[in-house]
Image (cartoon, rainbow, N blue to C red; front, top):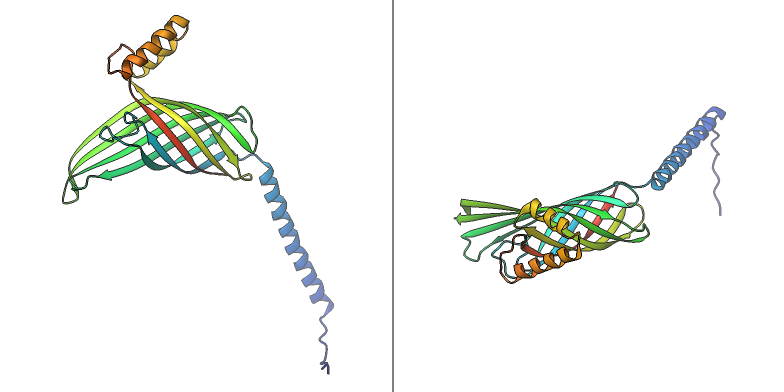
Length: 239
């Protein structure tokens, strides 16, 4: 059994106003979708994210000199796509450790500035990297959990390596890379000296000999004082 009641009729003006309002809402929705699609079509040039760093090498400048095993740090970074093939990155990592008796604490803060070169830009994009870094350490003597004495050290070094980036749409990517880091006892002068001396085969042999002497504890004129490896992995969000 179906009950029927009186049907309500709306004035023509009300119907027209409602139709106009609905059309307006649909128009705004379509405009938003078109604008979003247009934004998706544009290249995303600025990105930021977080990363995990695994350090190996007891002489790595990213480690406190007292460390004897591999360790991990967490940090963040900014990336800028300067061109289709080149990206610039600034990163900072952090780690704080306290001894079992809670009488000493060491804070480690590596800062790196890197240039990333992409031979090809695909969904899985390999890249080469090189840059400079500041490896800062802060040692604190503690008393009742408070620092009563501090000592700061900072080393300037270089790094180079390679990695790969997996794009997940337009706005995110995953990456992993390997970085070899080192600190030259002569600073920038020592590094530029190494580059200049690599102009000939005999000079290259001399450079390799210096590196070997450094690893054996000798003190050549242009030796590497500290070196190690970094494995980094993280997530980048592009805007």
